[in-house]
Image (tube, rainbow, N blue to C red; front, side, top):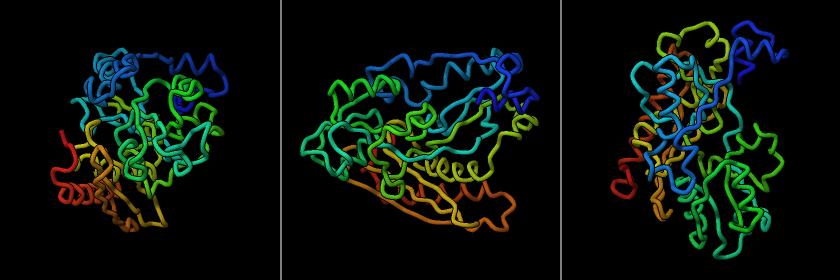
Length: 298
C-alpha cells in the first residue's frame, strides 16, 4: 500500500528510495498489538487497534493511516474520515489444521483457536462440541501455536494470509454465505484528516465497488451497535448491478443465530454508497429486532 500511495503522489513505485522519500513509512504499535493475552473486549474493543494511530493523525505526526477495515469502529474521532478504500482482497475466513481438512472432519471435542467472538459463535453453532479457546497474536505466532499442538485447528482471515504470501496454507475456506465474515473483512481503510478526504491522491486509490459493498456491511454493524462484545457477520457482493447482503448476529455460545438477507438495485442510483448503507442498516435493525436480548449489545 505504501507503493500505491507513493505512486498516487507522483513517485515511481519501482524505485524504493523515491517511494520512501514521497511516502515514508512510520510504524506505530498499538495497544491491541501489544496486549496478546486477553480478548479485545477486555481491553477496550476495536479502538485499541486505532487509538494511538488516530492520535498521531490528529496531531500531525502522520498524514494518513492504513488500517484493516474490520478493525475500524463504526464511529471515528471528530476531524478524521475514511477517505479511501482500495480494492478488496478475498474476505473469507480460512481453516488451518494439521489434523483435519475441514471443520466437519475435526474429532469430537477438538480444540479450535480463535480470538474472534464472531468466529467462536459461528463455529459453535455448527459444532457445539468444539472446545473453542482464545488464541491471539500475529499470524506467525498463531501458526507456531498450531504447530506446537496448542490447537487442533485455527481460523484466520484469508486476506491476511494472502498479503503475507501464505495463501497456500489453508486446508479449506469458509463459505461466506454460510458464515459471513466480519464487516469490512479483506478491505483496507485509508484514514486521513477531514481536510484531505477529497485529495487527488486519495481519489486515485479508491475502488468504488469495494466502497459500496463495505458501506452495506458497516451499515449493518452500526445498526447492531457492533463491537467486540457482539458476534456479527455481514457479507455483501455484486451480481450485476444488484448488491446482495447477508447479515447475522449470534449468541456467544452459538445456540442462537439470527439472519436476514436482502438486495438493492443500484443501476440508476446517484449515491450508491448511501443506498448500500441504508440496506445494511435496515437488515441490521431487522436482525436486532429478532434477536432481542439473545445477543450482547454491550
